[in-house]
Length: 397
Image (cartoon, rainbow, N blue to C red; front, side):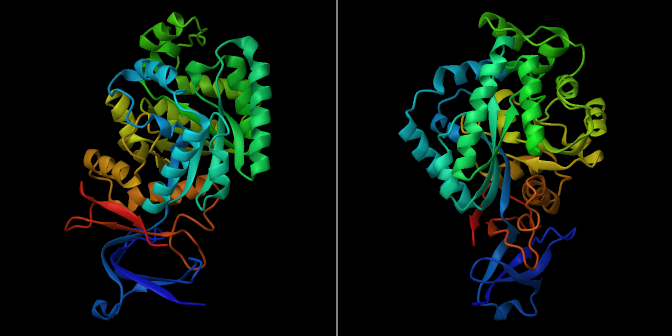
């Protein structure tokens, strides 16, 4: 066994509240961490990097199969306008093009340091690439269907898609999309299928348009649905997250032990947090700041989320609503808008919490003896070790 060693100005193990200054990591040929510590003399280090060594990232929310939509969408259209663009553009590419672009962007994410990903799929075009890729993925097989009569057929189709994922050796489960694209029946049925498999992802409170639809039966998204001839969900007078919780209860009684990932959370408030925690025993909260800015120039209530000690994760969303799938750019956006969040905490959101959601924390998420998280270098930090606009990441192992 070869004993390899890398040293850097900062080593973020994420097993402590602060990085190791002038630290080192030793690892064997397959990437398993052997030792971590502080350098006795940096001048004697054969490989010392001016920057930070961190664990491999976990992209908490991505739609990699939409990579063929890169650069095709207008920004700032709001959610209703974004949905119109999805409906217009998502099928422009054939399967071969989609597969090649999935491979290209998964390879790029891997080179940038993403070791695992919670990904959304609507078809099987990403399965071949995922099955052969070194990046671990858990795939959420997302379903849509606004009309109640569609529920049985949609669930049959997603069950068949899940069988294809199982055959490919991919961890996968059915999952609902959101309140505004599904009948109450389909929302409950797909949520039940995900809960039974132990993992569920849900686009939650992504926009005020979504909240207006559920609370008041009005707004741009309501008008969008009506123009399209689609049924709309019931008007509840409550938040879309509380509506989701009600649909979970219609599927099976609380509490829920499955790992539930609520994605976006732009309109989250304290009542919603309390309601979710009351019934969800393993709830995680993914934020995708650059996507939220791309679509409607908004950000989630990070300060409120931190005050409540929520398990926050970071995702990139898709290339239909983002210019890149770059975790460092997401962290830099958060740092610029919430400067009180220091690097160690940002990295915990980008690495450790995602590993815990995926039940991979024994291997991924932090730098510790016996783990194999991947090691990533982040360069171009400022004098205090914070991210800059020029900061970039690259995989070491």
